[in-house]
Image 1 (cartoon, rainbow, N blue to C red):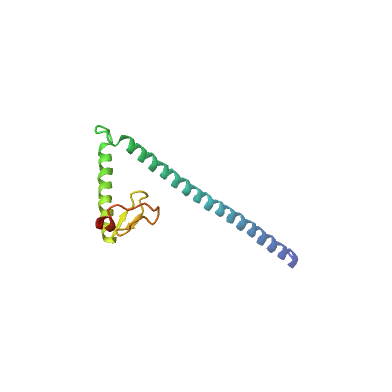
Image 2: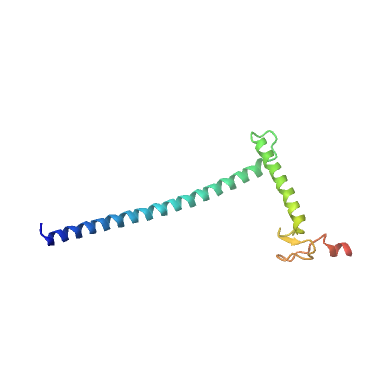
Length: 128
């Protein structure tokens, strides 16, 4: 084998290696895209399950003899605990909740800064 043939062989090997690397890079890119799409779809599925569960709960929560009555009670208890903690947080932050839009407002606010609703029970109302 002379030098020219050696260089041609080395060139073919480099070209083949480059093609193999490019193919692997394409495959890796496709794999990553598919994993991302699967993750997104799983997220949508979980959100659909949550929405379905919430609808089911809302529809059947008052059925005392329902097979899931214990789960419904756990949901009610959890919601009560959350409400108590949120109330404590509002007290610590000196805020209230707008009855119209649910935004947090200062307890001294006369109107909601989000929707403009008059806040009933504020200090101005007490002074009148």
